[in-house]
Length: 225
Length: 335
Image (cartoon, rainbow over all chains, first blue to last red):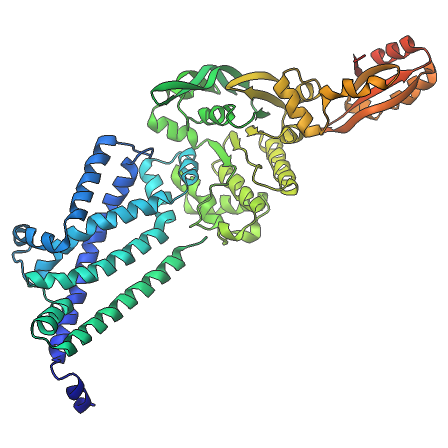
């Protein structure tokens, strides 16, 4: 078995692959956590301030919308570089997993917030009206009706965002972020070792598959329609 | 008691104010079932939503049991809404919650019920609307009629004194409509609940309402007891609604019977008079012959009624008319 692996994949250092996989998972977990923590309230705020919604605020909506659009239109590679001073300020380093998480969060949060806004808009307006008619406050409407009803859509948004983050982590190698994508670029591309490239791509593929099928299951579990 | 004093509502559309409800005065008594009928766009939905201020009035005052609803602040309005139930055409149940959880929601929102009280109340309500077996199901697993029953249970959870029904049976088939209307009539009696319902079907008004107001183009054009409005409609819009419900073309009658000889008259019976053998008696005593040109016999809520269009020939016509006038019926001479 060992002989076979050495023959077909001569350049693959499995210890390094292991560390790189762990880095990717850490970057993904950390950035997804903060993206959801920041993006969910931002998405709810976007929804509430939006046209003809509960808390219609034209100026605030225009401002938030502009901010989200600006961040979404900056290519992630550029954002990585632009963010370096801010990242150093927050984490003390711009390298490794810690250095990669802030730009990942800033890159994914506006994307996730927009998906949350869309999921909330899918909730039947009649449900909001019925809850209002029961005498619910705006906070009660959000937590007791809107979020539970939008849960399948929010899980779908989390899934799409997680997968987007996987591909972002690959780019973070550019600023020394580490992880599987970084390994693919440094060994597979720069040193022309196709076996390393193949192994990392297969591992990323497996990761994406797991994320998607887990996400799909959560969406189905929370859909009662 | 619900009172509207000069209440009106306008919407801004492209910078211009469009009137949805013209200045309206209205009085709905405690414990009655009050129907609002009108075509879509007539303003009935706006009028209903003004009662619990899902729509804010542009002017005027709304009083409920003497309390000025239009003067309430946000917190006061929320407490007030907890005492007014509402059901909807499309039920508006939370799809993510079970039947029991849907009924629990208004109790949780009110915040003044203990866990134990909530459980007892929910079980009671489920039993009352006949859904005791379905507590743990999700709305998607229920039929339309069952969903509306959940809606009714949810609306009654906080023991409101008023129930607002927004086209509550318009999405249901005729049989289910009848059973939901019967449930509404029962809870109206049991709880002395004031029910305000809007509909575009005269049949719904006939089955459950005590009084009715007809809306046309943002104004109430006719109102009164259902027996009065239904049997003797005056406004053209009302007449059209009655004709739709009865499948008769009242205006066409007079032309169609051009070739029928004799006097044509219409008799309207109500209550016990409906069952009295009046026609036969009068014909025998006065020697007139009658032929029935059109007729309907049915019930308005619990009241039997009959309305017959007759042609009378021969015999002592004046004596026959005098006999009809003396009897407990309403007589109209059409020709």
